[in-house]
Length: 85
Image 1 (cartoon, rainbow, N blue to C red):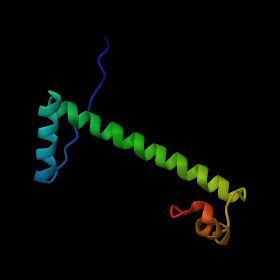
Image 2: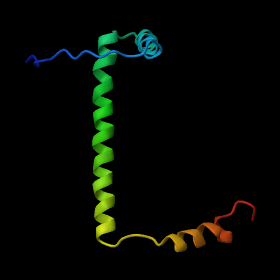
Image 3: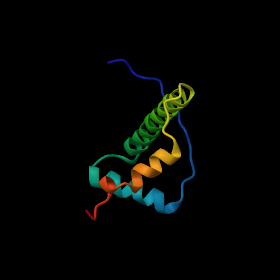
């Protein structure tokens, strides 16, 4: 199995967050290091998805695929969207 090169990253985190990391590591029976490797991967995936969705949305706006505010307000105010029917 090939070894992946690594780099040490250091971060100061608030004590309550560090305690939560330790608690999660214990609960999952994993090391703190394992938890700390998962966190940036999940965050980066989330940010990449957010960026993709932002670009997709801006493309929709540029193409004119939008809903007028008044039309949306009329829809929201219509009886078919109310729970009290």
